[in-house]
Image (cartoon, rainbow, N blue to C red):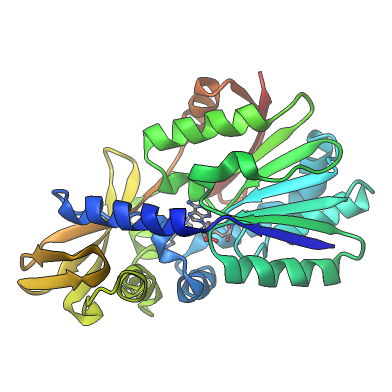
Length: 322
Ligand code: SAH
Ligand code: AVI
């Protein structure tokens, strides 16, 4: 059975218009990373996950491949898996299979802002897991997290891929608190976090030699062109990704290659970019175990399990209410 609710309504369009106006009128300019993910953006992210330089997906895959059964047992073999930012759910199959193997699998709840990929993934999963109920939600999880449908039995809320690293500290804290509020006794959070490592590897992961990350980054301009009647020239911007050692995060930007004006018809807005002006499009925070534990403590959660790949590049952690 598949039931997918879509909460991307007139409200979402108004929110986008407001966010983009605020971001383009701020100094320095900034766009929110959730706007990367139209259908093309989701496809480009899938390509990123296959790049030799982009290790996080492979590292998380390795952990889930080897330790999903152990993770599931530690989480009390939940019947319902809720996944935030589920995308193609490629790695999630390991968790679903482990739930099936411990005979607890009942319901999968994908929550994602990208409708196409959520519908496609749901259709694939009901084929792959006969009897699985998929009750999805297409929404901005920072706005509508509480609308995520429930399911029977104990729940595990998975937030994989390191997507929590794309939130600023204040948003991250608030989001973890809201996740904690959804957890009952016996429920667990499974969180993926990329770990701090040397600058060269971090910067290579976001500056791949095929230019896929650059295309992904510039896709946000294409989204504004199609959804807000803008006239961004994608060739007039360059992809920039640097590691900010102090903030312990990748800082991803677009640099204007010329002094230029951009028009956004739907916002009745003209925006000036100076040559070499940079606009942030995403941060990607890197963690240590201590930083994850302290984030949990601040949200009333405690660490119940810590799983890394053999190279120690990436961690999955299991948490529950204190
Ligand atoms: N979990 C997958 C995909 C990670 S990419 C993996 O580990 O490979 C980030 C995913 O989060 C995308 O599918 C994107 O559409 C979704 N996403 C990003 N911001 C979001 C938001 N604010 N609300 C809901 N989904 C969001
Ligand atoms: C989805 N998110 C965790 C990715 C990351 O690594 O921060 C998005 C990404 N941006 C550029 N490459 C990948």
